[in-house]
Length: 154
Image (tube, rainbow, N blue to C red; front, side, top):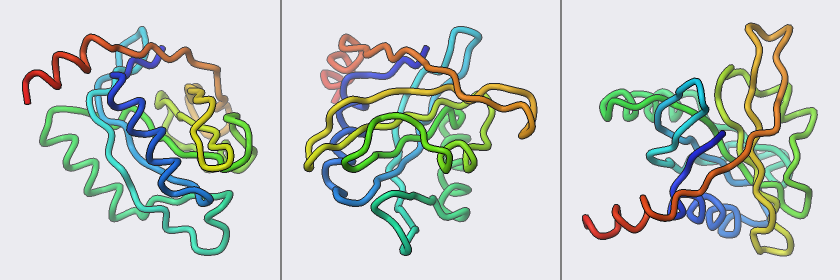
């Protein structure tokens, strides 16, 4: 299961709307447990794909290292990645699968139809190596209470 606050869930969906008709991308920070991944923070990333940004994404390695350091400084881990599919279903593509390398991470995809976020799905990358990796459908649990308590702290 992927646990995420309502605020972060809506923020990653809004990111897809803002970058439409191109794919957005970002990183989810939090903690992993045997029950799944819990997101504490999302970090927007730039899509460095210039050849086909409408149906591909790439996070620059130096940006990913910076985000990883940020996570470590906060006592968090990278627990997943998100991106959008402009005018395509919220299902992983063969390219998404080929470019997924973080075993145990959640891969969240939001379908953005005509500029509006529609369905959002999560897939857990499982396996022990590149050779036996696979995506499993992963339920998303949206924590509204955590969003409300976090907004009251501000």
